[in-house]
Image 1: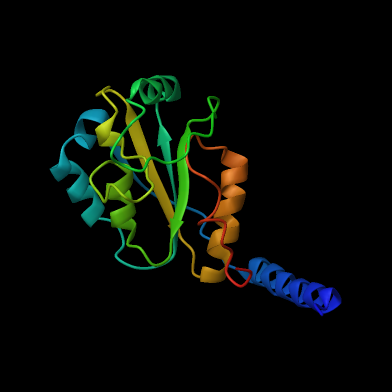
Image 2: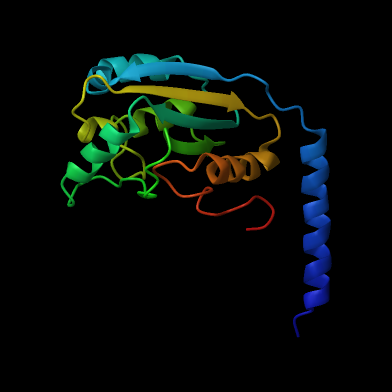
Length: 181
């Protein structure tokens, strides 16, 4: 027989550990940013050069903003519905300048950058912007912070997703929270 009281006790203990970790965490107060425009996104060399400037390892939370969300959403709606790449989920969030919020703990940050800007693996869920944006004047800002405590990355990403309401992507890394999944 399953002992739900024991499961409840273990879950509460785990959540108390997470809460203590979050209270004691020294979170960064500034982020690093890279800016790229629509014409640069469609040039693989520009995207590759920027990706090489990003950290090769570490736990990172990143977010992408766009100068004109209205234009980006119009172009997204105009792209063909049948595509060969896996595109991040449309959140129907027209009121946000935030395009995407994500994190990486095992994947290099530069790889996720290339995937979102359209020069990575087509079978990975990402924005793949180079494949569907056509406006050269759109300006994207890719920002990131390093989080020392890998246990907190998913919780912080989920909270940022909730507060920033990005246009694309689902909360969390397949909704898997370390220690609970």
